[in-house]
Length: 475
Image 1: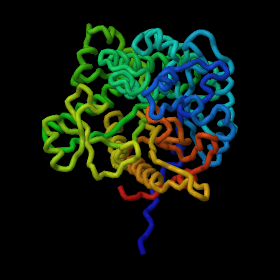
Image 2: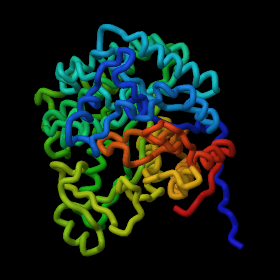
Image 3: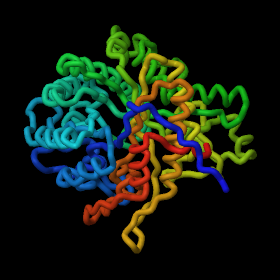
């Protein structure tokens, strides 16, 4: 008889939680004084979002707050990572404050604390107030100043109840998908604009962190970077170099300035724009960013990546790799993303390889051993449904989570200072340009009615949280 896998324990103080984002769940897009964001504008533009979906209602979290908080308590979540809607509290991005918006987050934070759940808010998860976009958006340094004003407001309001803060979520996505290829809001395709936004986002982190530290006693501040371990699909010098450039684009170009370094010099179309005297990076900018080094780093990881150099693509195809030039990751760069055609994937087309999570955690930990790490997003996109009995069974998600949480545990065993795992996502939600088709939640949401149904993975994850352990699985 086959023996069950040996449980892999986690430290007693390891933090277990779930994550969401404001525009993806709140709804109430035009209620109680909320101003429009760039995602309201983008999603209402024909052809931008699958099926014409918008976040106008999303999962109606704004009106179902108590119900959702009770579900979090039932899960046993110790941490809830969520984001504020900037335009709900500052409808034009600066100036006049919307008290009703602040009161909503008062109810959210107080409701979490009453249930013994620690709030970790994110100031910015991609939903820039539309009024600021019309003044230049993230291409303008004035938005950095507006972000500092916003951070000061939120720190002053909630700093008596919130100690851990995330400034910005996944600046790579905002920069490259929003400005380099136009797949996300605000929908631009301009390399120079992307290079400017890339830099201004890091300046905004620094300005926001400084504002929080000036406002909140003992503030602990991090930033969430999306990361993947990137492997060469072929063991050739060209593809090995390509994998290094791809990693520099995705990770180093953000993490290096945040930790006192410089921008990489190998990114075609971007590096020259960041050079001294090119008009984007002003004297003192890198020092200002480094001065607000994060106290901890959040890593959002869903899958590893494999790349080849363009000259190796034909050989890679002969060996069973599938890929084409011009994916969002590779615009203007000397690398091409490829994948095994037979590899297991989520409905997002992302390969399922838990070892990638362990490898990226070990890599970042070795590069920055003094930087505590959290996994702030990791999860499985499925095409979930309610069966005839009204149950939402998702065994594929459970296996994905089992493998990835085990990989996180193995990273801890390898010496990584990993302090928490926050699953993406608590609820099915509006998945940006993909609309409502992919479902990431451990709670099924019937979008027409808003009815919540915990999935099989909800019960499974509740058991993991309660036992602080998971089977090692087969990675």
